[in-house]
Every structure is written in structure tokens, then in C-alpha cells.
Image (tube, rainbow over all chains, first blue to last red; front, side, top):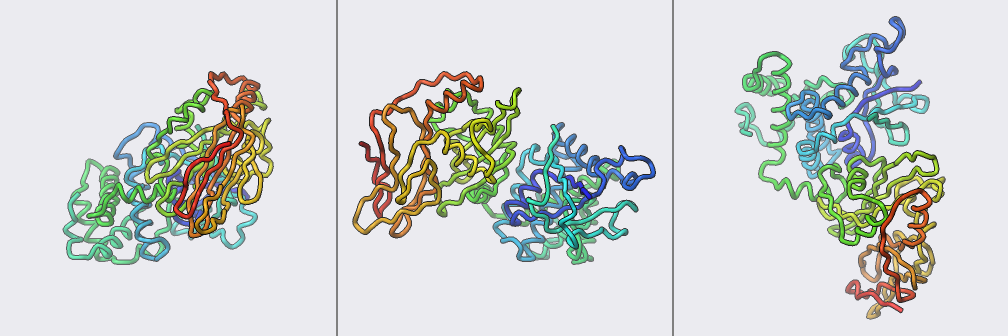
Length: 159
Length: 313
């Protein structure tokens, strides 16, 4: 089974440079719910969880730069919050936390462009964790991988 | 950005943790983080901060209010974390370590890069390769010393034989990326079968177009991470580039002294005439004016105090 996950380039870089190239991602077995037959698995994925929709939304945000773009503000808040959390947990130093937070503040719009991870699932085993229903946006299946190595997925970027 | 009243009574660490918990519990974007246990921390404090943010962020509709609130959240985290700190110094530290986002580096070119321009590479190509690299490798150097970054960007040719990787080599010095040279590595000219990292691509390129370098008792067209002992009180040749008489070449070297030895981070010398000939075979126009060497070899002389100078023969 192939899994798909859309993440910003800056998130990829932060995981690579500050977290030992170990990537956390939330993924779906369907790339674009709109293209699926009505009753097939994945067709009911809402836009907020659909990798293709997230890709389009981020792509639009960086194509028409807006300092107050909601998608990018959401990403900035989450990445800044994660930097604080990781420093509190001792996973990164306070210096690294400061660097991440400053990078998040100052990075150009292009750094927020989307990257699509394509993840073959056959080697993941128990590392592929189903998201509990109460945390999912719909009844469609979603998965979390907490420790994905760069050698375990492909990155696609569309112009 | 002023301090939130609801955070005034807390130390910066606690204030930051409250803000982080609120930021992660309110994320609406799966794929960027798991809130998990941290969102359950400081529930009363989160509620107080949320109430104050909502009062400041009130907009025309719910979506606008939520957006303003999210913006204020990351701005508050920035303020609490970095208050009183030198932001530029923080970015310089990240840059020196190779952790900076590409767009935050200041890209500069050494004067000698003109040679690469005369061989058909534009500075805009290099900037694009840095900002939108397909792969990047940051080499480690001695703390506080400049070291290298290698960027790769793939270019699809009209014919398969004309597809190439643009390889850019730059010094990192804080936030500055000082571009040394850039090379077109054509897949039809250079065997990249075993290349796994950008430095492997550079090595393979030097294997085709490089001149022999003598270092650490070995001869190779590409030297990386070699240590040369320096006997006390002596001047030695850290490396020697030979066979350069009547040749035009571009050499790149970097190293530093350790107690009793000299560490070569990187050393190679490209035969520019041979490289230019391959560019012409791929239809690249050049206007290089070569300076041909009058000497047959040059060496970097070092002693315990550092580099002494270049010796030529």
C-alpha cells in the first residue's frame, strides 16, 4: 500500500536539520479523494485531511503571498509550538529551539511550498499507527508515522 | 508585540509551555504535528490565554478570528523565546551549522566565479539551485571556521544525453553562502551509479575532469577528510597539485590545523579546458579566456601555526 502525506518544505528541512532526519507525518492511503469512485475507500476524505487538497491549498498560499495567510499562520503556530515542546522534552537544545522559531518567523514564502511524501508501507510494520476515530476528520482511514527516515519515502514536488 | 496580561505572572519557560500547548491543541492541519499529552497541560492557563487572544483577535467572522489568533500565538512564542536575544546571531549560528533555511542565507560569489560564468553558468542558475535544491549536503568543519555546502539541482535536457546536475559548491560563513564554483555534471559524461550523496557527485565529476592531487601519501583527483601529520618545527606540504603546466584549471581547497596535523576538508583541481570541451559537445556556448599555468605543480605549505603559503615548481 502506498501512503501519501503533504508537508511544507520548511517542516521537512527542520526535521532533517534539527531532528536527526527523522520525520513525523500524518498520511492517507488516498492521494486525491475527488478522483476516486464514489463508494471506494478514501473517497470520503474531507479536504482538511486530503493530501491533494492540502497540497493545492499550500501551493496557492505561496503563489499569491499574503503575510496573513491562514494556512501559513497555522503552520507557523504549530512548528513554533513543537519547537517549544521538543526543547521542554529535551529532544532539542534551547539554542535549536530559538533557531527553529526564528527560522519559522523569517523564512520566505517559498519555504512554505508543499512537498508530497509517497511512502511505501510494506516495511513500516507496527510503526504505521492508525489514527483513532475521534482524532480523524472522517471515517476514512488515516495513519501516523512518528519516525519516518528519509530513505523510506519519496518526495514529489509539482510546479 | 506586547506581553499578554494572562502570562505576566509566569516565568518565560512556563509561559512558553502554555503557549505551545495552546498552539498544538488548536491545530487544524493534520500532518504537521501531534498534540498528544502536551495539550492537556495547563488547562486553566490555556483557557485564560485563549480568552485574552480572542478578545484581541476578534474579526468579522470566525475564520478571520481564528487566523488572527493563530498569528498572535506564534508571535507570542517568538517574543517569549527570543526576548533580549540577538536574532541575527541566532540565524548566523544556524547558518554556520548548516541548519538555516535556504532563503535565509545571503548568497555571495567570489570574484573567481567569473570563470564559471564564462563557462555558461549564470548566477541566477546558482541561486535557483540553492533555493530549490534537489539535494544538499552541509559538510562539517572546525567550530567557528568556514566550511562547505554542496547543492544539486537537476536539469532535464532536450536530449537525454544533455541532462545534467548543476552542482554548486559554497563556503558557509554564518549566514553567508559564498559560492566558490558551479559545475554541470552530465550523466552521459560522469558515472553516477554509485553516488549516494552530493559529495559523491562532486567526487565522480573530479574523477573525470580533475587533475592529480598528492596528499597523505596518496594520489587522487579528489581529496576529502584527510589528515596530514605535521612534525614539530617543520614546514610540510599538506597537498600538491601536479601536472598543471600549460593547463587552465580551477582549484578548490579547504582545511585547518589540529594539534600536530593538518586536516584537509576538501581539495580538487578541475581541468577547465577538458571541461569546456565537454560543454561544447552538449551545445553549451562559452566565452572563457583561459590563463594557462606556467608552473608544473603547486603545494600548500603548512606548519604547526597554520598555512605558510603556496610553493610552486
